[in-house]
Each structure stands twice: as C-alpha cells, then as structure tokens.
Image 1: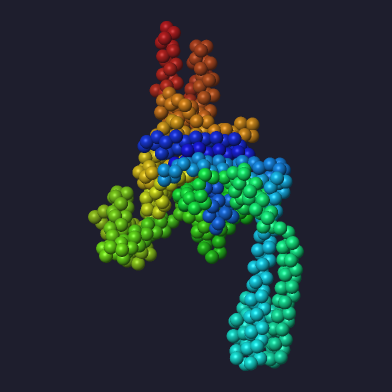
Image 2: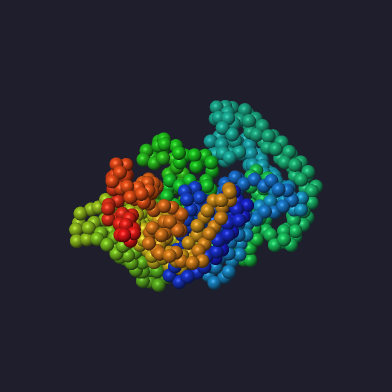
Length: 544
C-alpha cells in the first residue's frame, strides 16, 4: 500500500492541509514534524480513524466520536473534510469524505431517518407479537399443569420485568399467577396497538420514493450516504472510485502506533478524561482506568497499537499464530509447517545475546542468556529494549503486509543510535509497507529522504504543510535541528552570553571584570576549544 496524497479541508486547525507522498525505492519512511501541539498527532489520528473505521460497522462509533466535535453551520452546502489518494494491490484508489447538515434543502436526508424509524417500529412490533404469543402459550401450559412456575418464568425471562418475576414467585395461588400473566399479556397488546398506529402514520409517507429520489440526487453528485451523527443533525457522505468491499479490505491494512499516554481523539470524552484520573482501578490495582479502556478499544480497533502493550502478550500471540498456521499445514498437506521454528529463530536473532523459551501450553515464556540456563524475565530488559522488541514483534509477526503504518513518537525511550537505526529497521521488519511517522528526532529525520519530510506549521490559526524541493545544505544534526525543525541547537542562555562577550571582544576589553565573569559562565556550557572561542581567536589573528 502507498498513500499518495492526503488533503484535510475545513476540519478545525487542519484546514487546507495538502500533502503529497512520492514513492522512492528504499525510502518508505515519511517523517511529520511540528512543534509540540502543532497537529502532527491529530493528523495521524484523523487519518487512521477515517481509513480504519469508516467502512467497518463495529468501528464507526470511533469516527462518530471525532465528528461529534465538528458542527455543520452552513445550510444547503456539502463540505469536503478529507480526501486521500492511495495505491493498493496495483489499483489507484480515490476517496473523499464530506459532511452536510441533515436539513440540507437540496437533499432530503430525513427520508433515511423516517425509514429507520419504520424499520425500528416494525421490528418492535414483530418482537411484541412473538412475546405476546409466548405469554399466551405459557398461560395455557400453567392452566394445564404442563409446566412449573420456575419453567414459566425461565421461558418468559426476556418478557417479564423483575417485579413481575418476584410476584409470580411470591404468589403460590395459580389464579393470582394467571392474573399477573394476563396483565402482562394485556400490556403487550397495548404496546402492539400503539406501535401499529405509529406504523400506519409513518407508512402514509412515501419513504421508499423519497429515498429513491435522494439516492438519484446523490448519485448525480457522485456521492454516497454513509451515516448520520451528532444526534442525527449531521450526515457523513463519501465518494470513491472503488467498491465497498475494497475499502473494507484497505481498512484492515491501516495501523496506528502511539504511546499509551497519548490523548486519542476518537475516544469518548469520559474515556479521555480517565487518562488524567490518577486513581487506580480497584479490580486491577496495577492499572489505571485508561489502560483498561485502551485494552477494550483494541478489541474493536485491531489496527491500534500501544508501545507499552505487554510484550508477553505480543510474543505469545506471534507464537500461537505461527503454531496455528503450522497445524493448518498438517490438515492441508499432511506435513507440519516450520513457521513456529522460524519465528523462534528470528526472535533469537533479534535478541542477539538472549534466547527465548516458550512453555508447552503457550501461556508464558522466559529469556535466558545464550549458553546459560539463568532465567531472565521481560523486566530484566530496559525500557528501550522492550519498546524496540515490541515494535519488531508487532510489525514482523502480527500485522498485515503491504500496509500504511502511522507511528507517533516512535523515538521516545530509544538511544540516539537506535533512533537512527529504527529508520532502516522499520522498513526491514514490514516490507512493502509505508510509514508516516510523527517525530521530534533529528536522527530519524537525518536518515530520511528530504522529499519525504513534511513540516506542519501553525500560522494565523491555520495549519500549513511544507515539503522540501531541495536537500538541506548538510545532514548533520545541527543543520537538521535549525533548518528543518526550526529550533535552536544552542541554548538560548548561551547565545545571550556569547552576544555579551562579543561586545567586550569587539571593544578589545576582555580583561574587564564583567567580561571575565561572562566567560566563566560560558565555560559552564563549553570549553575554550569550542567553535565560538576558536572563531574569536581567528578573527583576532586575521585583524592583525
């Protein structure tokens, strides 16, 4: 998969942000750079939520959570918010999302809501009819002594409320029990008549014709209805040059990796608030509520990965997956596969001086030093080692190949050498995938092809995206920090001290008490062999 172009329109501070990605052999890493709060994490999350969630029904609520914060105020107008162009399995895919107010006068979106209400009432009517029949059958069986009261209550478990069940148990008189059930039957009959009347009223509207007209108008605008959101006040629309099944397949090749302290905007407000709740969960004392929420969310969003996700679970999942594939080979060919052995060998090669041992039940494992039986647990690895290992296992053994992988703060916790190495490692661990990485690491940026670098800048409450047409003068870290990241690589305090010292230098007054004090302060940051002092020496000699 390769994301060629993405454009955000009219979405909060991400407005008119237009980014193009050009494929370049051996350079599939695309760094996204901005100041803290500059929008790079929002960019990744929005892209992930739309592409991973929009076309998979059980994930759509997460997209609605994001859309809830955007209110349509312009009537009779469809507003584009996101468009992407990508290549997937040799096919060029164009996809655009738009939003509209429900009461758009050109499009009668209320017809969809009316149809939903009719379907809802019809389903309720059918269920009441079934329940009413069941109550009458139970009444007959009780009268005929065919069933006990316990069996009767069990049969009507979803029909009776708690009070009705209690009254049936407390009254041993059969007539009283039958009266209770007759009242339940009458109540259901009343519900049935009310819903039947509502259906008659709704069916007087020609909803089918209205929906047909709506679809024709949308089709003429090359648009498709997707869903209502914001209490049915707004509508999400989309247009694409491919079928829904292809978009659903693409959704399962979109991934987002982030630290577990990152605010995820696709969660509900109360879920996000738990990130700032310092109270621990009473059931799991070592976990706060936000950790547990993320674990539940990951059951819906299989493309979401947290760097702090348990390495134990990841390794066991990778080994179980390999074992199951080997067993499948036995069923299909009669010969046991070699994926499990290959997985263990690859893990051992990655661990370098350590070996992994999986128990026979695939429920736990331990490490040991090579040529040693001394057990090591994951806690014996550093935070950086665990993070790098978890990313390796996730990319190498868990996710789909040929994917778009969005990574936030991948450099946190990694030594500068590892930050530089991770650029190439990612490409080796997941071949044919594209990585869009939000980073503050000059080491990762210095390894990247300059045309792949994207800088997000906030100007006048508007976000702009800048890309480079020419390579930087140098690829050293100072140049990267200054020219590309827009930061000073020399502390501000030191710069001010240098300026003050230079004034004394230019006045040939370096023996001044204040000048000497300033020099002492400078020497707290750098030695007299620094470029600053050597530069002053050169200027003095050149002047002579």
